[in-house]
Each structure stands twice: as C-alpha cells, then as structure tokens.
Length: 266
Image 1: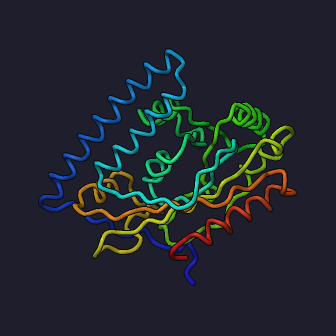
Image 2: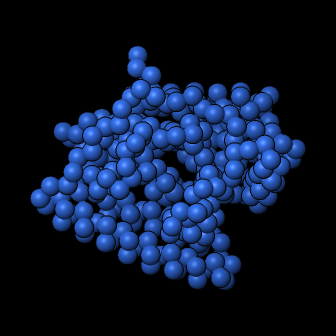
C-alpha cells in the first residue's frame, strides 16, 4: 500500500464556461453573507451576548453551505457535555460543516492568528490559538480549564493535517494531554465525529479532499464552480469520559478507532 506521504496531490479541475459565472455568484454571496454577519457578531460581542454570537457563526456556516449547494446529513447526537469534539480533517469545508451542528470553538495553531482577515475573524469568534511547545503547555492547560469549566466545547483535528478523505491518519496524542491536567479529567468529555464527503456524480471519490500542495484558492474555485454538489455526512459517536482513560495515548487511540469505524471508505 502506498504511504500517505507518497500520495501526490490530485489535479484540480479548472472552472469552465458557466462554471465561472456560478463561481462568481457564489463567492460574492458568501462574502456578503459572512461580512454582514461578522459585523453583527461584533455588535453582539460589544454587548456581551455570547450565545447570540455563536448563533451568528452557526447561520453564517449554514448559509454558506446552502449557497455552495453542499447537502449536510447527520447521524448520532452531538453531546451536551463540556469538553472537546475531535474529527478527521479532509477539507477546508470542515469548519463550515461542523459549526452548524453545535456550539463549538476551534483549536488552531497560533500562526493562523496572523493570517490576513481570516486570523481576525477566527480570533473574534473565540478560536483557541495554541503553540505546540512544552514552554506553552501550562498556559494551554489553563486556557482549556477556563473554557471547559465555563461549559465550552472545543474542536480539534488530531491527525495534524488534512487528507483526501479516504483514510484516517494516526492520531497525534499531544493535544489530548491537556485534558489529563489537574481539574480537567472530571469535567471533560471527548466526542469523536466522522466526516464522510460524498463527491458529485462523475467526480472522483476524493474530490472534496484537500491535501499535500493543493492550493486553497484553486480548490475553492473547483468546488464552487461545479453546478451539482455532493453531500457530507457527520457521524456523531458516543462521547468518551476522560476520567475513564489512563493517559492521552489511550484516549487518542479510542477516538481514532471510533472515527475510523465510521468512515465509509477506509
């Protein structure tokens, strides 16, 4: 079997004919939607309306998926406990797909905070930025404790990178370690979620995948210029109580197996 690191990036289809028109319309509508709701989000934040802020994020994602034409299906139930949601990372669409289902806050590498526009939006909607170093381990633990104690649910992708959606990579247990710090195991649950992207008819199975050196904008152009979209299914697995696991590796393995079992093609 070919190793994942040896799998070359897929060739991205370029928009053709009416596809350019469709791309233009969808991009304009999505930008208008997100910009308008982001300004509304800022206003609500000013008045401390946190719950309404999350609803704005939710409907921004729902609206964007509607405009793109991607159908969203769900099986299982999102947990009501505080803690974290972990999922396989297949596409730049993952953020739009996971947000509508529940109130969650993404955990992202600190570099994203410096990205033009995207970094500002991510910071404003409550994204948790972390540095993967031992020096920042205590600070990271305190952030997690504060957010989870307040009832927040965090979201991160333990594979550490995005894939073609046709496989699950071994989970990195680093981020799971924070949940074993004093005060967290008793109040934290982890819910594994499998994302299954189903490509449109006539398109290859990994069409929604985004990996290797595939450009972000070329991938966006390819997807949004296609008339008939496919669908994505979210499979919510049973939540895992952190206190019932001995260490981060056991918890990471259990989460990985649950997500792997829910993948349609693996």
